[in-house]
Image (cartoon, rainbow, N blue to C red; front, top):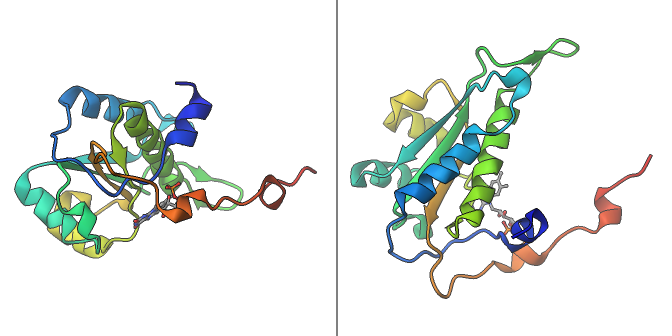
Length: 172
Ligand SMILES: Cc1cc2nc3c(=O)[nH]c(=O)nc-3n(C[C@H](O)[C@H](O)[C@H](O)COP(=O)(O)O)c2cc1C
């Protein structure tokens, strides 16, 4: 599959089969995250692999999505501001940018591995940090519930709503 085919075939999958995720595929997804570029290569990021039944129950209690409840694994991604690159001209801290690039690499790797996921940003971050103290110093940018897409999984209608090139691109 070419890169163009990969990004076009990806969609937010919200229905999964109950088949467990192969460890090798999960490792490939995580390696894709670790391969991501970060500002000054500081890598101020963390990926948490949530897969024990107790931890899955905790993380899914922090998001309002019933479809997340039965996934075999959830990845959480966070960036730590302390130590991250700060742009001198305006003091902008790049920890969240770095974490989002790592997350995007992993989201696309999920597709490449024949798995499915949805980037979940709507969750109770303070509650996640309370339930998982290891995450407390991180800006949590994404949860990725991961599994094999169910046979009848399909994109939501919103998937097909894309702005035109004219609306998004300005040539200066
Ligand atoms: C930063 C971010 C946060 C998102 N948060 C959620 C979420 O909390 N719940 C959800 O169901 N989808 C979430 N999505 C998925 C978007 O709704 C989805 O990507 C968008 O509607 C386009 O559809 P597609 O991914 O199928 O192309 C999020 C996507 C991004 C990039």
